[in-house]
Each structure stands twice: as C-alpha cells, then as structure tokens.
Image 1 (spheres, rainbow, N blue to C red):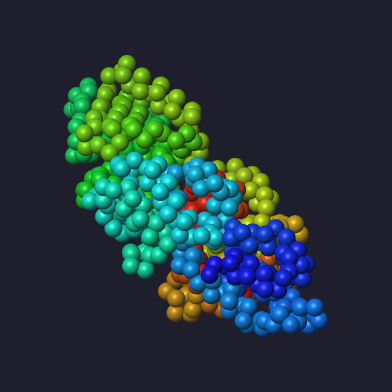
Image 2 (cartoon, helix red, strand yellow):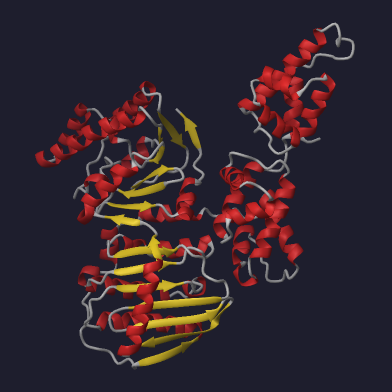
Length: 583
C-alpha cells in the first residue's frame, strides 16, 4: 500500500473530509490534497508526518466517542497510525535517490527545464528533489522516465558519464531500453555498484591542499629561464591523431614562449580531455609549458567548456589550480550550449595560433593546425576575440593586488541574504579583544598588523550583528582533537586582509575561541553552529548564499578568493553532502 492509499483509507474509515483533517492537524488543505493524490509524501520522522498522525488520532478518538458513529468506528492509537504510515514510506533508498539525481544532472549536460517539461513537473519541484527536500511520490516511475530522457537526449559518444556513475561498462549495451534500465536501477539503488565520487569535494580538497610556494619550489619556477633563442618550427603544420595532438599543444606552447610578443593569450577547447590526460608524460610537459608562459608574464584568458560532462569539467579545473593561484589567468565560460556534433579547439597568442576540429565521438580522426603566418594568426586572433566577447566570467579571482576591488564586491555579496559558511578555522567575529591580544603576544604580531586585525575584527562584529537582524547565518565547523591540532595547528582565518604571515592558535586559545563561538550561537537566535563530522578543510573557507553565489577563500599564503556565480559550479558547491550535527 502506498502512502496516499493509506491516508485515503483512514479518511474513508473515519468518514471525514480532507478539510476536517486539515483543521485538526494544522496542515494546509493543499498539503493534504497533495498527500491524497500521491504528488507528495512527508519524510519519515518529519514534523508534518507527526501532525498528520496526531490529526487522524484525534479524529478517530472524536468519532469513536460520538454516539452517531461509535458503533462503526474504533479509535486508533498514535502508534498504530504512525507505524501504518512509516511502513508505506519504506521505499528504496530515497535519500540516495536524491543524491544520485543530483550527481546525474551534474554529470550530464541536460537542462533541468527540459527534463521538467518531459516529466510534466515544475522545475522548482525537481530542484527540491535534487536537494533532498522532496521525494518523488512514485520513485520507480520517476527514475525510469528520467533515465529514458537522459538516454534519448545524450548522443552515444557522450555517454561515458553513465559508465562513471554506475561503475559498469556500457560498450556492449546497444539496446536503449537496457541502458535505461541500468541507469534507472542506479538512481534507485546503488548497493551493488561502486560509490559515486563527489567531484566537487575532490576539487576543493585539492585546492585546500595546494601550496603555491611548495609548487614553485617543486618545479623550480624561480629558476626557470625563458629561452630567447628561437627553435625551428615550420610556418604552418597539420597534426593528425591523439599522439600528434599532444605534440601540437606542446609546439604551440614552445612557439608562444619564444615569441617576443607579450599580447594576452586566448584559449578555448570543447574537445574531449580524458584520452590526453591518461598519457603519463603529457600532463607534466603541458604544465611545464604553461608555467613558462606565466614565467614570461603573459596573461591568459581561458574560456572553459562547462557544458561537457561534470567529471571532465572538474578534471580541467583541477589542472588549472596552480595557475589560478598566480592571478595571471582569467577563467570564462560560454553561456550558449555548443552543438553536440562538432568539436572545436582554438589557442591564440601574439604570433602563433593553434586551431583544431573533430566530429563528436571521433576525436582521434580530427585535425589540429598550427600557424605562425601573420595573416592567418590575425584571422584566428580576431576569431578568438569574438569568442571571448561572448564569454562570461566563470569565477572572479582576487589576490592582494586587487584587494580593493574584492572588498567592494564582498560588501555587496554579504548583504544579499541568509548564508552558510563551511569554515576551516573559527569565525573572527566571535573572538574577544582579550583573546586576540593573547594570540598576538604568542605570535609576536607587529603593532601595525595588530591594529589592522583589531579594526577588521571590530568591523566584522558590527557587520554580523546588523546582518543577523534581518537574515540567518550558519557556520559549519569541524572541531579537532589535541593530537590532530599538534600535527596541524589552526590559524586565524584572515584571508580578507591578505597578510604576509600566519597567526596560529595554541590548543588553549583554540578551545577558548570554540567556547566563545558556541556561546555566541546561544545568545543570537539567527546564528547557528553546526558540527561537521567529515574531515575539515585546513586552508579554505566556503561562503554560500544559496541560489546566488559562493566564495572560496584560501587562507595560506598567498591568500586568494574565488567568487563563483556560475549556476552549475555554484549548485555543486551548495549540494555537497557534509554530515552535520546541531550544537
């Protein structure tokens, strides 16, 4: 029996209307109507389920006591009603269904609006399923139809994400119905399938662990000498096949480094990335070539293809972490969805251009063309500039050299609504001046830096107090034990100030600040602290204003901020599953 059938049976036995149940339970008429039709079901152990059970219990008690109906109606106990309803809610792992539905939308390039039209659902309802706020009333039908839509809308050459999600090869599955069944089964139940890797979590962990200073030392960036002697490359050359495509990319980088031109570089590609990334040597050589471009002082305008499968997009972004940290790369994306028939590649610097093309699914049969001919380079540069004019910022990156612009933007962002923070340390606005003085003394902080931090802390306290008067703020923290603290001492999170040195807690000052933060939550109704049970980020803080923006701030030197408003990236950050416990 389904939930809706059980509810309708109770109403029939009690001979009462939905209006009567609404009045006595406190649930609205529309909610009761959706429950009766099967459009919605409450979550197990939710307040709405408790209200519904209480309402039916009171109605049954009232009807049983009535002289008119007592002969035909027996009063139900609360436990009987609750058990009957919860038994109908024991469906396949619906929390996993919502999580998998979110992974599927991120991995594929389908539009949520198009899927909503196909299912005859409202887009906002699908968004609530995606976030776990709602569960489909008929999970099996929902998964079957969603899988059918995905298979219908995705060309065979782009279905590699299905293998990654399900953990099963689809090379020998030629029947669309069988593919739909595989994907639908994965949506409903993943007990026998490899777990999906959270690509956004992986990206953030790599960003958290990355240290620009260590990276510079590891590749001896400061010792790199940009060569001035030209190498012999032909005026133009064509390249065929994956192996030659890798050669083409390296030849382009060499020619750009050796060119006397300091014009900005423009790069774009919607070609598949994974085959090249499997080569053990190419990524290292490519990274070295990019490092040489940056060492030369070139600025790179990188237009990312965010319409590729989510795993490929995140793979690309991960490879750019070291370069983003330099501040010499501006990332962009195209809002328009590229066609799914042709693949394109275009990289242009001052005196050299590399262009590529292929048919989707046949990358190895494509062609790359490198040229240093002046008229051809001019043509490709105009083409690249036209492409850049259509692009939007994927994320805005702020370092100390544009701190004023960041401060202005931050003021605007932080006034835009309720927020959630995933913090690596503890919030500075819950710190007292006395505790700050103790920490300064232990870290030998200079008078000028101390004054700067006092001023910043005071401003933050005032800002948050004013903010909490109209909106809510949640900080998700991960307390660490003493052994972990001794291995990795926490630092004050002062990335907004772009300081040149770290200021660390002692175990005692950390415990005091943790207590102050909990005390702050107790005395401010709109502020809450949630304890995360997952391992903490050590160097990054994530601020989220749902539906609007996300800011990733890296605290270790050099401090840097990534402001993200792109919908797909922002949504992936918003929907990271971080197990939490209320304090």
